[in-house]
Length: 611
Ligand SMILES: Nc1nc2c(ncn2[C@@H]2O[C@H](COP(=O)(O)OP(=O)(O)OP(=O)(O)O)[C@@H](O)[C@H]2O)c(=O)[nH]1
Ligand SMILES: [Mg+2]
Image (cartoon, rainbow, N blue to C red):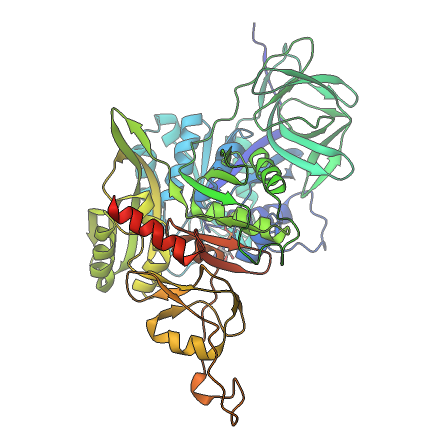
């Protein structure tokens, strides 16, 4: 019989929201005001965004744990990313939580990712506290936003209990929370109290022995692999022997060599792990996210963490360009393979497939931004590799090809609606809703294939002069809407190896937009620019001017080249066509044709035409 007990000393909450609505900033404020904080201690801004790329980009990429204390209750907090490509992190974080704080920007209101994360919490039956954040914004409209949040709950089929959610107004950045807009408050007292009163303390069964669900993995040079997760039942102590049940239902024995818990932003060693807490356990190397760690005598696996399927796939290969191995330390396919497998261990939303060709891998994930972050991380670690264009994952049902479809939400000035609609309809998008409330800005909704959106954001920002806002939400699979060109332009391709020179580039400028400056290494098959016309052209970017005795090279006034916008990784993977690749090294991003030889490409083309 179940003997339900609760651990009143603990609360486990995930902080969830659309991107940039202020989650990580709110965690800073909670930390500063909690009983753990030592006055005078310097706290960096967005301390939870500890990864280099998170700091540089000002966004959260990986969900992370910390804890604060309020009136002797420990609140374990999981800060999650708001970007849709990292949604898998939210699903993983919710596996540790009994409640969620849903942040909504007081001006922007609920946006697509708000809907996604709220849907996940409602499905899990997790209690939600709504925080209408950033009420200090000049354009804040908190009352309207509250109505919109109610509508969203109703739309997501929340039951009466869920509809009766507690809500708070906040200025996370200043560490202020209040019940009504008019009352005075200068701290987060109300938020802490609401968490403790509204979020249920973790429940466990008194009769059950130790059971922990591994929701995250870490690594320490001293301790090796760290298994991180919530203790669902029972207790465990240092030196206890346990088993880890993996996805093949194998029982791998282990001995607990260290137990730690979150204490503020740090870890603290403890003798014993208690029911309901989130712990960091050492003593097992061979462990995966979703495994259960439990006793040998009574091994019962918990339900594995499930996350939505990947929607995008991308080809990763070794770098086969003639410049390979010059700029990176790690170039072998075995190492790339190992690294990608390691990624799938840490990152629940990423899948890896080996192809028949041992140098070629398929990586699947939730979006091209997630892929770009993975590639960027790898190049910083010293890898060289080549990657193909991100492709959506199709499905086949009853003889029909289905493709992923997104709901696209656009908010832009009325004047830009024409161009946006035109571009989207070229890409098989359909306008499904248009709201014009006379303010000069419109809100439009489109139903559009996911593949149409790959690389579209840049174009959208250009078309709306940087003022448009676009958000997407995965809407499901629908029948394939037909082909359309991913790009209406061709490529300017180098026909030989050498170094680019100003003279040659200057004379190529009228043919299109160049990606390289004078003095850069080039090779046959390397794409050095975007052609104005829809075909590729092969050119010689290292062609020198025939020198007369009078003039030295490079002194010619007429060969001053226009500045080039360097190719970033994200632009590059969105730019290439199916027969093109991006070469990535720690120092460079280069684009090239899959087939480097112009002659071979010609042969392939004529063979295709004959067909
Ligand atoms: N006006 C105002 N701005 C805020 C407030 N809280 C956070 N911000 C700003 O909002 C931006 C985003 O803050 P973050 O805390 O990184 O948002 P986030 O939700 O963690 O973002 P992701 O993790 O990338 O989804 C930053 O520029 C913050 O300074 C607030 O209370 N008022
Ligand atoms: Mg964040």
